[in-house]
Amino acid sequence: MTSAIPATKIPARAPPSTARLRELDLAHHLPAFQSYHLMQTLGGSRIITRAEGCYIFDADGNKILDGMAGLWCVNVGYGRAELADVARDQMLQLPFYNTFFRTATVPGVQLAAKIAGLTGGKLQHVFFNGSGSEANDTALRLVRHYWDLRGQPKRKIFISRWNAYHGSTVAGASLGGMKPMHAQGDLPIPGIEHIMQPYKFGDGFGESEAAFAARAAGALEQRILELGPERVAAFIGEPVQGAGGVIIPPRGYWQQISAICKKYGVLLVADEVICGFGRLGHWFGHQHFGVEPDLVTMAKGLSSGYLPISATVVSHEIIELLREQDSEFNHGFTYSGHPACAAVALRNIEIIEREGLVQRTADVTGPYLNQALQRLAAHPLVGEVRSLGLIGAVEIVRKKGTNLRFGDKEGTAGPVVRDRCVANGLMLRAVRDTMIMSPPLVITPAEIDQLVATLEKSLTESVALLA
Ligand code: PXG
Image (cartoon, rainbow, N blue to C red; front, side, top):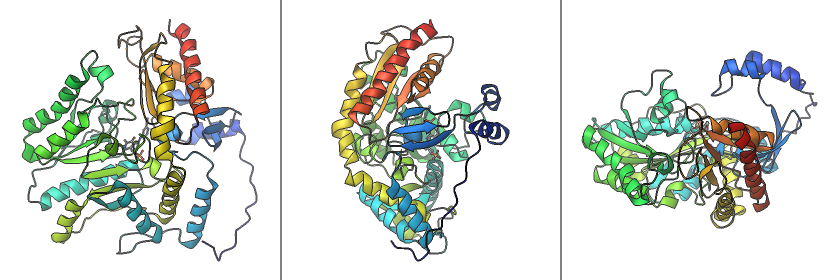
């Protein structure tokens, strides 16, 4: 796209010193999920200044391998000039327009069609939002509205799972199963129920995979029957729970969940915010598990995090009913389908396709990560390693062959290992005592070796620290 508006030369401005930035951070900036007291004690945040490929750089001169792809999102890696060019061109052409008044934008329409092609089947209609949380809010409101229109107004309950993450808005945090989040702001809102998660290492240790799958999926049927099927609107789940600790469900779990939903007429919502866009070696996680949801929510990898955008993809059956009943969906965000974000997302998908990143994850880098992690299985601190595509977890235990944790409470060892990883130049997250990873999909086998070797070194250093 050529622009009529010439490029403006902006004089370079030197940023404040790192020390000054830390002062300003402490004085004014409230970061996410943080103890503001601890922030003061520790002297502020690590300031990330730039990134390239799979590496981030901080203001103190450290180069760090980003084992988390930012926050599960930078699937195409950092430093893609083409995404910046597309954003710039679109901002000059049309920086903003809304979708409220029977108006649409070129990239918004193109992106909706592109996403519908990727989800396929009955998933043909796309509602845009700004974040993963909003995508789930949209799903909740649309599903409840749908059941009203279907003449089943009692069907309002969403069933989710403990330890699920579906966002931080009022509906997102309510749908999620994070108890510390529920404890703040009087959540969950009414009409949301939680059942057990399919976490075999934690909740089905020693049980056979088949028995555990049947028990975990059976919990859905049991809850539906307790509540009365006529009151249950939908089940929502991440194909693989990410923030909960990379919980890869046992074989057969998703098939059973899908069959139970069908049996009781309950809609299935797949939250693909983390699993979407190649993370599991398929475009979407539900495709890996072979189930067809009625709604799919997505964010993060949709734009590789270069700009904020999310989508709620809806089945034809649901939208047909709204059409038939001529019902207006009274819902939308100023930034729904933001043209610059949509243009970046479109080009991001094009990069994923052009570079074959989904297939590469399935055939090359996913299996490579899986193999490399096996090297850690013998480590004295490791109770289990697991991965699927480019998402993985390493469980830290006090006693090999068990799932017993260090310390009086969970989450004693994880932060110790995590701090060693960061000190050794690897950004990983610890969910309680589970080390989790989700690197950019462009990661090379050599970088995977570096990731695993750094984690191994950090585990070994942690043995003495935990003794
Ligand atoms: N669903 C899933 C599955 C997610 O992982 C959201 C919804 C919400 O997306 P937004 O864009 O509203 O943040 C997420 C977000 C963590 C962590 O600690 C994970 C997320 C967000 C923040 C922290 O791993 N995932």
